[in-house]
Amino acid sequence: MVHYRRQDEIKAALKSYGFTENQMETYIQDKFGWGDNVHNQNRLKTKFLQEGYIVIYADLDEFIFHPNLREYIVANLVNWIVPTGISLMQHSSEPPLDKTKKILEQRDYCKIDTHWFSKTCILKKDYEWLAGRHTKPVHAAISSDIYLVDVGKMCKDFMLENNAESRNIYNKVFWRYSTDKKDIFNQVFAEHKGSLEKLPSIIKEHSLF
Image 1 (spheres, rainbow, N blue to C red):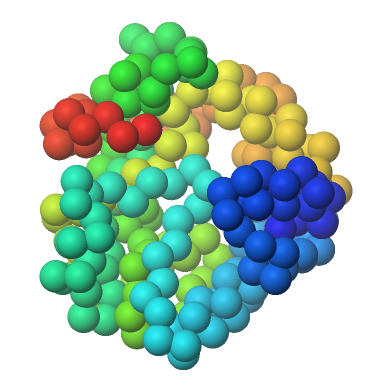
Image 2 (spheres, rainbow, N blue to C red):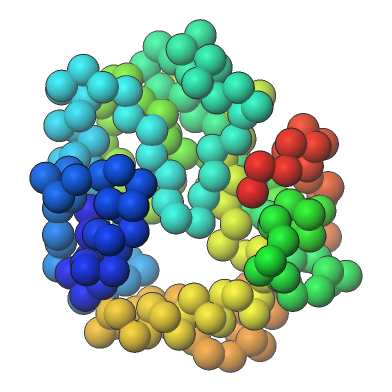
């Protein structure tokens, strides 16, 4: 799906990776942060499942991590796979992100949060996502050997840059994604003070992103 305000630029980038015009769908959305696009996500997810595909979905600020992801999915997927959720966060001892280097070369801390960040992101059987896709099927187990890594809080400066871009694209943006004040981010980070821990070593060792 391609947002209408940047469609020429985005389509050109997708075509450079081998996608064709008939594989793209333009959508109109003028507000961001309330999960308004989840109906399109559900529609396309259901369409692909009905056609016999496995659906693997992550947001732009999320990475699904396993050192052998394809083999893991083939061996373990029955209905859904719900990875262990991780929020990668900038520790107070870490400097702003250097965009010329990999994220995992510069970040060591995270919050492991299976309530909010463990999402039903690998599916063979349909499941209705809600906004943000934070809910899970009642009896779905959370897999401890595969991770969904959210990098949205990896750098406060980068978050401010993203917010400026969001304000340019959308007419209405949820406060957390629109503010230009780092003090507000400090408040958000303060909520997690004391709960940060070292990233699992397997993620650091592979340094995939």
